[in-house]
Image 1 (cartoon, rainbow, N blue to C red):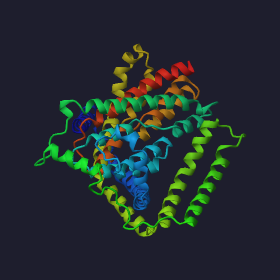
Image 2 (cartoon, rainbow, N blue to C red; image 1 turned 135 degrees about the vertical axis):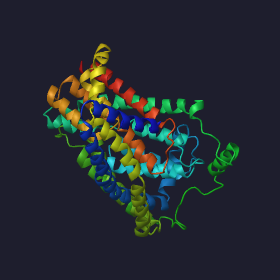
Image 3 (tube, rainbow, N blue to C red; image 1 turned 135 degrees about the horizontal axis):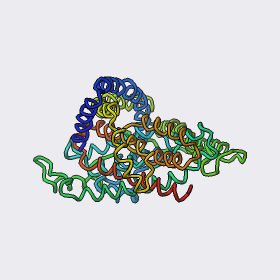
Image 4 (cartoon, rainbow, N blue to C red; image 1 turned 60 degrees about the horizontal axis):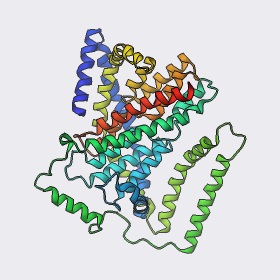
Length: 440
């Protein structure tokens, strides 16, 4: 489906631009976005990927990823029945989802790319998305998070009397989007047009037998260190003291009564601030106590992260150039103009349509639209709170798909686009309904 969407954006951009004498702007946008994809997106992402994939490799060698996967196996088996319970992909996906929930964008993307790479090891049709990949991407595009920090910052910067008022509405809307994403993924994978074909020269039964063997432990699926040392008493004591130190920091951040934020927001904010320092220090410390050569393993993982960043550049260039051309041609404004009266009749504020159309395409563009909405209608207006809720409960679907699938060279995305857009649609509708009920 991405083939048709990409081609449609390019062709429509040229047609619309030609009709409105804007071909120069379309051409300039193509070159500008190609540069932006490499210089401003892929290269900064390379450093972040190197850092987090290095840390993840250390955690994997210490057995932490396998431990996490085994602990959460019951809850994930229904979502990902094709993934063996002790496979490292389980742990990687859980860590990615947890990072998304806490709003740790810099950690969530590298962890998600690591999960995609782990899922690719189970793929019997390289280049084609598996059911597990599509479900995982659907969950990612539903933007499950507790605190929409960016939207709150926009409201606060415009002097809202209660910028955190959208926390509850965002949680409800993103929950609806997540449920819709999983339901869409599970339903679409059963349709004949989206079923996986048999692998060339390898019957489906044989593939199933291989997966079963992995699940039963007949094949090693977790890359732990060759010989892990048992934790000594002093190692356990050191880890306990380290944990108590972070509990002390958490109490300092989350418990002050003088804080202006509500208790729930303070707790989540404290978790968000402490999560990354804790992961960056606790994983290597535990691994070192188990006898893992942490520096060597980190460097090996960081090297993999840099290679992933280089691999996704063509996919980033392709999707961002198409989006940039369509936006520069005025395509989003044109669609908003014609759909506005229809949406008004349905009870949907037409002022939100540019933001809704921009959201799956561009995060920075959506942020600009949201800022303009808040400035024009006021930070405490119903439209501004609806916009903030939509921003906090949806995701840049096409960017996410391009980056995640590009990292494992998947070009046949099957139903992933439909599942992601379904999540966005449901979250938008839920945002409008919930905000009307809560804010009147």
